Length: 275
Image (cartoon, rainbow, N blue to C red):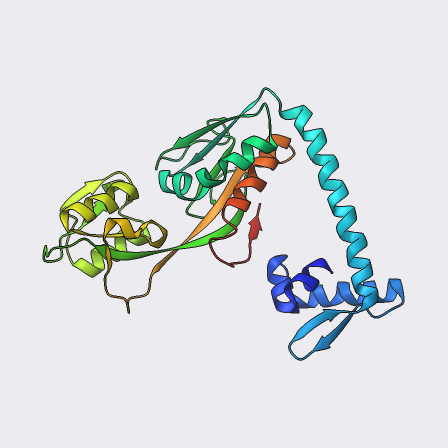
């Protein structure tokens, strides 16, 4: 009911809940029967709450807030003195999580944070990290993951003409969509390889070489020009992942929730979960 009230359509509500429209419709019909009154009316292309529906939503939201506050207060006692280790790649940490770190620290006094920024995957099963933020859906092991956003990557170049020469990531990442895109566009291997998107964009800015980087990193101060604007961007999914044995750990839960909030402004792609 809350999802339909917020989204306005059965399709959007179903996507936000990772289900189908038939299930949403069935639950709304069932609630209408239980409360004996009409909760939604269809106006043009949008479902809107009736006065009775609005009153019920206020009650549900107040109940949800109460549960959240109770869970948070209990969680503070269980998290004090602990350290959460977050594994991710450098640009996701710097560009999307660091701007919101103050919120996390303020909301979780006594909880330490350690970021492990590397392109090499760590083992969540062996405790090398508590939570991982990846650019792909988890495929291995007993991992629980939730898609939190999508980012776009496009070709850029600095001032100058280097006849299609470009900067790439290390050979171990040649399989990634952005590296394949660059190889297809420029028709040759990279003339320079580095270990991060930040090094790529700064190298392109000072050398005039081309690169494929996240659009969010092509900041005006670097003087980069978007190449081939008619060329579609590469899209990468961002997933927040932890081991299934940790799903009831309050530190893991509050950390995952904070990471999701960090990426809320990236786009409006509905979140999706897998286990």
